[in-house]
Image 1 (cartoon, rainbow, N blue to C red):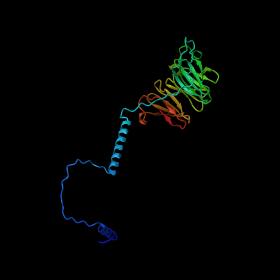
Image 2: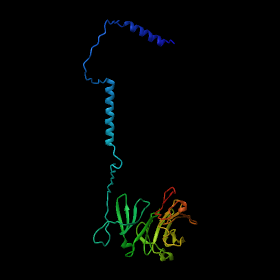
Image 3: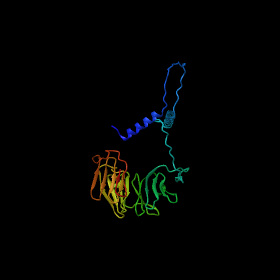
Length: 287
């Protein structure tokens, strides 16, 4: 089978053979060549390939040296930002000033300031000016009565509780005073301490004390029976829709003002050891 390509190759071959000089040999002689040690001669392609392979080996070695072995990773460097002000609050009647290192409750007021109940008293922290104000416990309570939780209302009222005997303190923006009427409740007298308190978006105060829940709307104290055992709630939180959420050690409850709903292991919660509860602005409950 002839094709134009084969014909062209055949043409070049015939002309190349014709151009070679004719060689004739009258006699063929042989001669021995002494033994010579031969050295390999690398052509350029082989030399380039060898250099490339050597470079690859070196690169792999460098990567292996720079890559830490499992368990040899460097420890992360943790930096702690410095606090611009570290206040030292003097405890009244103390021989020497000492920092407040025990906080029982903490809350944020509508103006963004921080309030906390401590062993020395109630601390108000103006975060904009970074200045603390301390209301000494000795000026608020009888000697030996420790402070408990604290909560801020939307209208700026600050509520604080005490332990043994249970009391409520109210800050109206100018001074602290004992909440009238709370101590007169029979359930309060029978209880050892207030376990939790919270304020809703409607400024209604909720207090967990003994076996009951106490509600205060600004004028009237209402007692709501809740449980058979004491200390049924250690955290109270009010959702934006005014639903009250209560966390106990073994369950979580919600109260819409009429009906209680219980949540336990059946709803995916642990059967014990429930810590605290919080509600986000969109109504999501976190436990």
